Length: 441
Ligand code: SAH
Ligand code: SF4
Ligand code: F3S
Image (cartoon, rainbow, N blue to C red; front, side, top):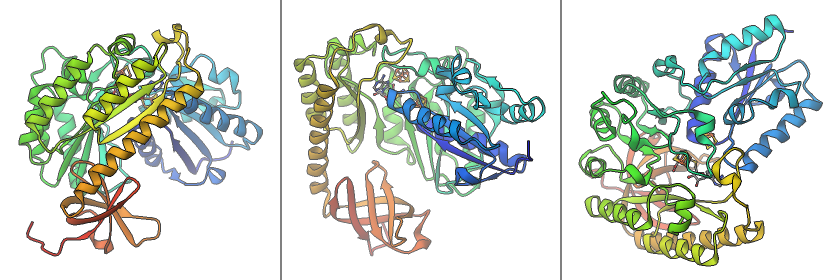
């Protein structure tokens, strides 16, 4: 095999995967490999994959078939959630695949490459247990304005539809000092915004009975770090969102007023079948408490439509609640049965057509809610962190503390700074404005 000089990495799925790709890339760069944007010229191709829905896996399988026809002398590897969910079959199904690297073995990438180079056999590291070294490995970030930090890996919740507990293993909270150290490292690199990641950030610390540091405590520690201007977090499971967290959002200057807090369904019958462990009454209580403590808070949700046995009535409840809560961001998915989950034993009895109809109906409602909200925002001001240029290099883009996307015309030197924007109009899901002249905000 020729010497390795370059690698290409493609990331599917969530922010956790984006971060994991940076952990892998950093290690490859430590062995002097250069990252390239074009798979054709790369000596190593890595797909960091997602298993959350059938379509997520199909995209990757399509790629793997493509490489089968035209592998040349490249090394090809699959990382991420599919390396876990299909660990028994992928290497057999695709003999041209060189390795599988699971979500808990990210630090083994170089050992794997060495083994492939010396033994020329397929390699696989797919442990269900969290690799302790990950705790203290800080990836080099490509984005110099904002990035994420993983604070809890894995998930113990076993919602009946979800494959994540199988692909990421048990919940493990990272040591708080190591998180603070990583945040300081990012501040030192000039980053302004961090997003704390976990499948359920509210359960931070609960897996360590002797730890006194829970999620709100961690926010207090991070809020003190000079250089970091904004702190976000996701995802918050409704079952253990606490009043202390809401007070921390209210009281801490850097913690942004946006909570991604998935409802999943508006029907208690469906929530029970999903094993979400809360009722709609409980969910609404939390939403109301949050809004009373943090009046300007925005709330994001995920919704699954077409879960087994979801009747028109169940869907109608979701629709009405969606309209009542007026979610500010929403990801709406059609239910997709996943292997070895509890729900995969239920009959997937809602047709694809009906799933799509329900999805479109909710999406339409969501867009109407956004338009109504944006109309009211015109004439007001919002502070944004300026992130980057649009493709044409004329329009700058950023987000408000409440996570609204805002664009305006401005100079490159504003990138990375906080700016006040007068909101003038909107298009689709983006607010359009101009720099506020008065700098004394
Ligand atoms: N830990 C997060 C969610 C991570 S997965 C939480 O509990 O909120 C992101 C979203 O994908 C979920 O919120 C859910 O809405 C969706 N999802 C998960 N499994 C799915 C499935 N089998 N079919 C359709 N959507 C699914
Ligand atoms: Fe999946 Fe539920 Fe865990 Fe979220 S909380 S990752 S939906 S099992
Ligand atoms: Fe993320 Fe997909 Fe895995 S959403 S946790 S990459 S299954």
